[in-house]
Image (tube, rainbow, N blue to C red):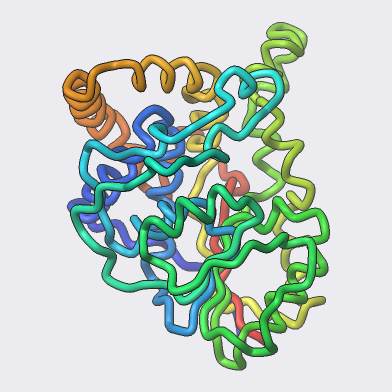
Length: 321
Protein backbone atom coordinates (compact mmCIF):
# COMPACT_ATOMS: atom_id res chain seq x y z
CA UNK A 1 0.00 0.00 0.00
CA UNK A 2 1.67 3.28 -1.08
CA UNK A 3 1.82 5.96 1.57
CA UNK A 4 0.06 9.25 0.95
CA UNK A 5 1.12 12.73 1.99
CA UNK A 6 -1.76 14.49 3.68
CA UNK A 7 -2.42 18.14 4.41
CA UNK A 8 -4.49 19.00 7.49
CA UNK A 9 -7.81 20.63 6.62
CA UNK A 10 -8.06 24.18 7.89
CA UNK A 11 -11.63 25.26 8.59
CA UNK A 12 -10.98 28.79 9.88
CA UNK A 13 -13.76 28.88 12.46
CA UNK A 14 -12.97 25.40 13.80
CA UNK A 15 -9.25 26.19 13.89
CA UNK A 16 -9.88 29.39 15.83
CA UNK A 17 -12.11 27.61 18.33
CA UNK A 18 -9.54 24.84 18.76
CA UNK A 19 -6.72 27.33 19.29
CA UNK A 20 -8.73 29.17 21.93
CA UNK A 21 -9.40 25.95 23.84
CA UNK A 22 -5.68 25.20 23.92
CA UNK A 23 -4.81 28.79 24.84
CA UNK A 24 -7.19 28.58 27.78
CA UNK A 25 -5.15 25.69 29.19
CA UNK A 26 -1.64 26.75 28.10
CA UNK A 27 -1.93 30.57 28.07
CA UNK A 28 1.40 31.15 29.85
CA UNK A 29 3.15 29.01 27.21
CA UNK A 30 1.42 30.22 24.02
CA UNK A 31 4.06 28.56 21.83
CA UNK A 32 2.92 25.21 23.23
CA UNK A 33 -0.72 26.15 22.68
CA UNK A 34 -0.37 26.73 18.95
CA UNK A 35 1.86 23.65 18.55
CA UNK A 36 -0.73 21.44 20.25
CA UNK A 37 -3.53 23.08 18.29
CA UNK A 38 -1.77 22.21 15.03
CA UNK A 39 -1.10 18.67 16.28
CA UNK A 40 -4.80 18.31 17.06
CA UNK A 41 -5.69 19.70 13.64
CA UNK A 42 -3.55 17.05 11.95
CA UNK A 43 -5.11 14.32 14.10
CA UNK A 44 -8.58 15.55 13.20
CA UNK A 45 -8.55 13.57 9.96
CA UNK A 46 -8.37 10.31 11.92
CA UNK A 47 -10.87 8.63 14.19
CA UNK A 48 -10.00 6.90 17.47
CA UNK A 49 -11.80 3.61 16.95
CA UNK A 50 -11.97 1.50 20.06
CA UNK A 51 -10.45 -0.21 21.75
CA UNK A 52 -7.98 2.69 21.78
CA UNK A 53 -4.87 3.45 23.84
CA UNK A 54 -3.13 6.77 24.46
CA UNK A 55 0.56 6.04 25.15
CA UNK A 56 2.30 8.66 27.34
CA UNK A 57 -0.99 10.46 27.88
CA UNK A 58 0.47 12.75 30.55
CA UNK A 59 -2.24 14.67 32.38
CA UNK A 60 -4.67 13.84 29.56
CA UNK A 61 -5.43 17.47 28.78
CA UNK A 62 -4.20 17.35 25.18
CA UNK A 63 -6.32 14.34 24.21
CA UNK A 64 -9.29 15.66 26.21
CA UNK A 65 -9.21 18.93 24.26
CA UNK A 66 -8.58 17.16 20.97
CA UNK A 67 -11.71 15.07 21.55
CA UNK A 68 -13.79 18.26 21.87
CA UNK A 69 -13.71 18.77 25.61
CA UNK A 70 -13.42 22.22 27.15
CA UNK A 71 -12.71 23.80 30.51
CA UNK A 72 -13.87 26.90 32.32
CA UNK A 73 -11.50 29.85 32.27
CA UNK A 74 -10.85 29.18 35.95
CA UNK A 75 -8.83 26.08 35.00
CA UNK A 76 -5.43 25.75 33.33
CA UNK A 77 -2.44 23.42 33.59
CA UNK A 78 -0.41 26.00 35.56
CA UNK A 79 -2.57 25.92 38.67
CA UNK A 80 -1.25 22.61 40.02
CA UNK A 81 2.53 22.76 39.64
CA UNK A 82 5.62 22.30 41.78
CA UNK A 83 9.42 22.67 41.90
CA UNK A 84 9.26 26.06 40.19
CA UNK A 85 12.63 27.03 41.64
CA UNK A 86 14.22 23.96 40.00
CA UNK A 87 12.85 24.41 36.50
CA UNK A 88 15.53 26.68 35.03
CA UNK A 89 18.76 25.01 36.13
CA UNK A 90 17.74 21.50 37.22
CA UNK A 91 15.27 21.08 34.32
CA UNK A 92 12.55 19.95 36.72
CA UNK A 93 9.10 19.19 35.31
CA UNK A 94 6.80 21.67 37.04
CA UNK A 95 3.76 19.67 35.96
CA UNK A 96 4.86 16.47 37.72
CA UNK A 97 2.93 17.51 40.81
CA UNK A 98 -0.60 17.20 42.09
CA UNK A 99 -2.66 17.43 45.27
CA UNK A 100 -6.08 16.61 46.65
CA UNK A 101 -7.26 20.02 45.46
CA UNK A 102 -6.77 19.27 41.77
CA UNK A 103 -10.15 19.46 40.06
CA UNK A 104 -10.50 20.65 36.45
CA UNK A 105 -13.67 22.66 35.90
CA UNK A 106 -15.15 20.94 32.84
CA UNK A 107 -17.77 22.88 30.87
CA UNK A 108 -18.01 20.52 27.90
CA UNK A 109 -17.43 16.79 27.84
CA UNK A 110 -15.42 15.30 24.93
CA UNK A 111 -17.25 13.75 22.00
CA UNK A 112 -15.64 10.39 22.76
CA UNK A 113 -13.45 8.65 25.34
CA UNK A 114 -10.28 6.56 25.21
CA UNK A 115 -10.15 3.07 26.69
CA UNK A 116 -6.65 3.19 28.20
CA UNK A 117 -4.05 5.86 28.93
CA UNK A 118 -0.49 5.13 30.04
CA UNK A 119 2.27 7.28 31.47
CA UNK A 120 5.52 6.93 33.41
CA UNK A 121 4.64 9.55 36.04
CA UNK A 122 2.04 8.72 38.72
CA UNK A 123 1.22 12.39 39.32
CA UNK A 124 0.30 12.83 35.69
CA UNK A 125 -1.95 9.79 35.82
CA UNK A 126 -3.69 11.18 38.91
CA UNK A 127 -4.41 14.35 36.95
CA UNK A 128 -5.64 12.35 33.97
CA UNK A 129 -7.93 10.38 36.27
CA UNK A 130 -9.65 13.62 37.31
CA UNK A 131 -10.84 14.14 33.73
CA UNK A 132 -12.90 10.91 33.62
CA UNK A 133 -11.80 10.64 29.99
CA UNK A 134 -9.98 7.30 30.15
CA UNK A 135 -11.70 4.07 31.16
CA UNK A 136 -8.43 2.85 32.65
CA UNK A 137 -5.01 4.33 33.43
CA UNK A 138 -1.78 2.31 33.60
CA UNK A 139 1.63 3.38 34.90
CA UNK A 140 4.12 2.28 32.27
CA UNK A 141 7.64 3.08 31.02
CA UNK A 142 7.78 2.93 27.20
CA UNK A 143 11.31 1.51 27.42
CA UNK A 144 9.88 -1.77 28.75
CA UNK A 145 7.42 -4.32 27.32
CA UNK A 146 3.78 -3.30 27.57
CA UNK A 147 1.39 -5.21 29.85
CA UNK A 148 -1.15 -5.82 27.06
CA UNK A 149 -2.05 -8.84 24.96
CA UNK A 150 -1.23 -9.09 21.27
CA UNK A 151 -3.60 -7.16 18.98
CA UNK A 152 -5.41 -5.52 21.91
CA UNK A 153 -6.15 -2.19 20.24
CA UNK A 154 -7.78 -0.88 17.10
CA UNK A 155 -6.17 2.56 17.59
CA UNK A 156 -2.79 3.31 19.18
CA UNK A 157 -1.90 6.97 19.69
CA UNK A 158 1.42 8.40 20.86
CA UNK A 159 2.95 11.87 20.52
CA UNK A 160 6.13 11.28 22.51
CA UNK A 161 7.82 8.20 21.03
CA UNK A 162 11.07 10.14 20.56
CA UNK A 163 11.36 10.44 24.36
CA UNK A 164 11.98 6.67 24.58
CA UNK A 165 15.61 5.55 24.58
CA UNK A 166 14.74 1.96 23.60
CA UNK A 167 12.91 3.02 20.46
CA UNK A 168 13.23 -0.36 18.69
CA UNK A 169 11.48 -2.08 21.58
CA UNK A 170 8.74 0.59 21.66
CA UNK A 171 8.06 0.31 17.92
CA UNK A 172 7.92 -3.46 18.19
CA UNK A 173 5.52 -3.28 21.13
CA UNK A 174 3.28 -0.81 19.31
CA UNK A 175 3.12 -3.18 16.33
CA UNK A 176 2.41 -6.13 18.65
CA UNK A 177 -0.56 -4.55 20.44
CA UNK A 178 -2.18 -3.15 17.27
CA UNK A 179 -4.88 -5.20 15.60
CA UNK A 180 -4.55 -6.24 11.97
CA UNK A 181 -6.23 -3.49 10.01
CA UNK A 182 -5.90 -1.16 12.99
CA UNK A 183 -4.18 2.22 13.02
CA UNK A 184 -1.19 3.71 14.82
CA UNK A 185 -1.23 7.52 15.04
CA UNK A 186 2.29 8.65 15.81
CA UNK A 187 3.28 12.33 16.04
CA UNK A 188 7.07 12.68 16.02
CA UNK A 189 9.53 15.54 15.90
CA UNK A 190 12.18 15.24 13.19
CA UNK A 191 15.90 15.75 13.59
CA UNK A 192 15.66 18.94 11.51
CA UNK A 193 14.34 20.70 14.61
CA UNK A 194 17.94 20.88 15.84
CA UNK A 195 18.62 23.34 13.03
CA UNK A 196 15.59 25.48 13.82
CA UNK A 197 17.17 26.95 16.94
CA UNK A 198 19.56 29.74 17.89
CA UNK A 199 22.45 27.29 18.38
CA UNK A 200 24.11 28.52 15.18
CA UNK A 201 24.66 31.86 16.92
CA UNK A 202 26.52 30.43 19.92
CA UNK A 203 29.60 32.58 19.25
CA UNK A 204 27.49 35.71 19.75
CA UNK A 205 24.91 34.56 22.30
CA UNK A 206 27.09 32.32 24.45
CA UNK A 207 26.44 28.85 25.88
CA UNK A 208 24.68 30.14 29.00
CA UNK A 209 22.12 32.00 26.87
CA UNK A 210 21.45 28.85 24.86
CA UNK A 211 21.14 26.77 28.04
CA UNK A 212 18.54 29.16 29.47
CA UNK A 213 16.55 29.09 26.23
CA UNK A 214 16.90 25.37 25.59
CA UNK A 215 16.53 23.99 29.12
CA UNK A 216 17.85 20.63 27.93
CA UNK A 217 14.77 19.77 25.90
CA UNK A 218 16.50 18.38 22.80
CA UNK A 219 18.88 16.34 24.94
CA UNK A 220 15.85 14.67 26.53
CA UNK A 221 14.75 13.25 23.14
CA UNK A 222 17.19 10.33 22.68
CA UNK A 223 15.35 8.89 19.66
CA UNK A 224 15.00 12.12 17.70
CA UNK A 225 15.89 11.28 14.10
CA UNK A 226 15.30 12.17 10.47
CA UNK A 227 12.41 11.05 8.32
CA UNK A 228 14.29 8.16 6.69
CA UNK A 229 15.33 6.71 10.05
CA UNK A 230 11.74 6.79 11.29
CA UNK A 231 10.65 4.95 8.15
CA UNK A 232 13.32 2.30 8.72
CA UNK A 233 12.17 1.86 12.32
CA UNK A 234 8.57 1.38 11.20
CA UNK A 235 9.58 -1.18 8.59
CA UNK A 236 11.75 -3.10 11.06
CA UNK A 237 8.82 -3.26 13.50
CA UNK A 238 6.44 -4.53 10.82
CA UNK A 239 4.52 -1.28 10.46
CA UNK A 240 3.47 0.14 7.11
CA UNK A 241 2.97 3.86 6.47
CA UNK A 242 -0.56 4.71 5.36
CA UNK A 243 -0.16 8.49 5.37
CA UNK A 244 2.33 11.15 6.41
CA UNK A 245 1.11 14.59 7.48
CA UNK A 246 3.64 17.40 8.13
CA UNK A 247 2.10 20.03 10.39
CA UNK A 248 4.91 22.03 12.03
CA UNK A 249 7.19 24.11 9.81
CA UNK A 250 10.62 25.52 10.62
CA UNK A 251 9.02 28.94 11.22
CA UNK A 252 6.76 27.41 13.86
CA UNK A 253 9.85 25.77 15.36
CA UNK A 254 11.91 28.98 15.35
CA UNK A 255 9.15 30.76 17.26
CA UNK A 256 8.72 27.86 19.66
CA UNK A 257 12.49 27.69 20.22
CA UNK A 258 12.39 30.88 22.25
CA UNK A 259 8.76 31.45 23.23
CA UNK A 260 8.10 32.12 26.92
CA UNK A 261 9.92 28.99 28.15
CA UNK A 262 12.68 30.82 30.09
CA UNK A 263 10.28 32.97 32.10
CA UNK A 264 7.43 30.48 32.42
CA UNK A 265 8.17 29.59 36.10
CA UNK A 266 8.14 33.30 36.98
CA UNK A 267 4.91 33.90 35.08
CA UNK A 268 3.31 30.91 36.80
CA UNK A 269 4.37 32.11 40.23
CA UNK A 270 3.07 35.59 39.52
CA UNK A 271 -0.25 34.41 38.06
CA UNK A 272 -0.89 31.99 40.92
CA UNK A 273 -0.44 34.74 43.49
CA UNK A 274 -3.16 36.93 42.02
CA UNK A 275 -6.68 36.95 43.38
CA UNK A 276 -8.95 34.60 41.40
CA UNK A 277 -10.87 37.58 40.00
CA UNK A 278 -7.75 39.42 38.83
CA UNK A 279 -6.20 36.24 37.43
CA UNK A 280 -9.31 35.50 35.39
CA UNK A 281 -9.57 39.06 34.08
CA UNK A 282 -5.92 39.17 32.99
CA UNK A 283 -6.08 35.66 31.55
CA UNK A 284 -9.09 36.48 29.36
CA UNK A 285 -7.40 39.64 28.03
CA UNK A 286 -4.20 37.64 27.47
CA UNK A 287 -6.06 34.95 25.51
CA UNK A 288 -7.91 37.51 23.38
CA UNK A 289 -4.63 39.12 22.39
CA UNK A 290 -2.81 35.83 21.76
CA UNK A 291 -5.69 34.45 19.73
CA UNK A 292 -5.35 37.38 17.33
CA UNK A 293 -1.55 37.29 17.25
CA UNK A 294 -1.36 33.53 16.68
CA UNK A 295 -4.14 33.30 14.09
CA UNK A 296 -1.77 33.55 11.07
CA UNK A 297 0.52 30.89 12.59
CA UNK A 298 -2.36 28.49 13.19
CA UNK A 299 -1.90 26.78 9.82
CA UNK A 300 0.19 23.71 9.09
CA UNK A 301 1.69 25.39 6.01
CA UNK A 302 2.71 28.67 7.71
CA UNK A 303 6.36 29.39 6.83
CA UNK A 304 8.03 32.77 6.40
CA UNK A 305 11.06 31.25 4.66
CA UNK A 306 11.06 31.12 0.87
CA UNK A 307 12.97 27.86 0.31
CA UNK A 308 11.65 24.43 1.20
CA UNK A 309 12.83 22.64 4.32
CA UNK A 310 12.07 19.55 6.36
CA UNK A 311 9.13 19.91 8.76
CA UNK A 312 9.76 19.93 12.51
CA UNK A 313 6.96 17.50 13.34
CA UNK A 314 5.01 14.94 11.34
CA UNK A 315 1.99 12.75 11.98
CA UNK A 316 2.43 9.21 10.66
CA UNK A 317 -0.57 6.95 10.20
CA UNK A 318 0.66 3.36 10.36
CA UNK A 319 -0.83 -0.10 10.17
CA UNK A 320 0.59 -3.58 10.80
CA UNK A 321 2.05 -4.88 7.52
